[in-house]
Amino acid sequence: MIELMYTLLEDDSLTFLLPKAGETALMASVDGQPAGVLVVRRVRGVDCILALYIHPKFQRRGLGKALLSHAVSKEPEAAIVEAQVLEASTQALAFYGSLGFAEASRRRMALPAAGTAGVVVMRLARAALTSSL
Image (cartoon, rainbow, N blue to C red; front, side, top):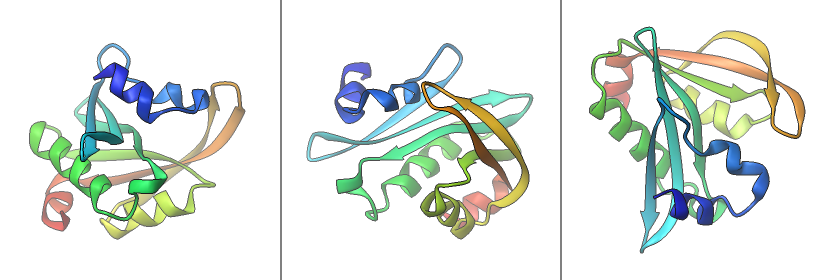
């Protein structure tokens, strides 16, 4: 799976999306081609979405929603789902907003080889997410 994820993340600047110890990764494929990845970590009863990336040629096909749905159904114990979204990623902010996520806070985050960036922390109660998927 990691090799397929490297294929998906052909741009070396995206390799920070690869899962680390204690994280769970899900990958979507279309016709055998890697198309997207979701990385999640459980922290104090909150499922934190650390990365959700869909390759541009596979976007707007429901893959992000499908990965999120699978992650939520696979780990039902957490009551809250949280996503950390770059402020500059208006498409991602709109995606999470369409599912009912709301801004919980803002902060700065260090990015590999890119300094820091503004991040919007968005949260949603799992029950609300399950019904919107």
